[in-house]
Image: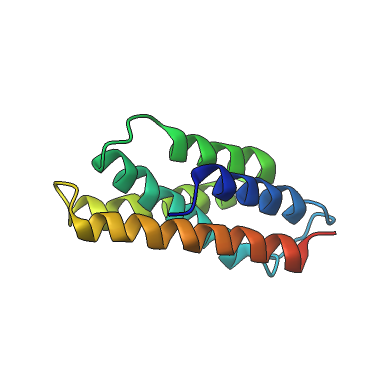
Length: 125
């Protein structure tokens, strides 16, 4: 399984490099990836707590992403909606940690790391 610290480092790098360019009036080309990353964080927040991890680590990572992006109120609402969509996508499916939930955690950890790394490498300075 991918370690949370590797994923968080890649996510922080993606968020910081996404901000390195000038402000844009239209969505940046990395916007869909950041929204998907927010959704992945919401999914991980639900699943990791369901499977025994107590705390707010993934919600805290979402807060760090929001701080790094410093989005407009409208864009902030989109980030939050993406996070909540990820959380709710599993909230209605799982009531206990199952092998399927554990596999979903592994897949989302990999996806989050890939998104973070790709955003940083494609759009970072």
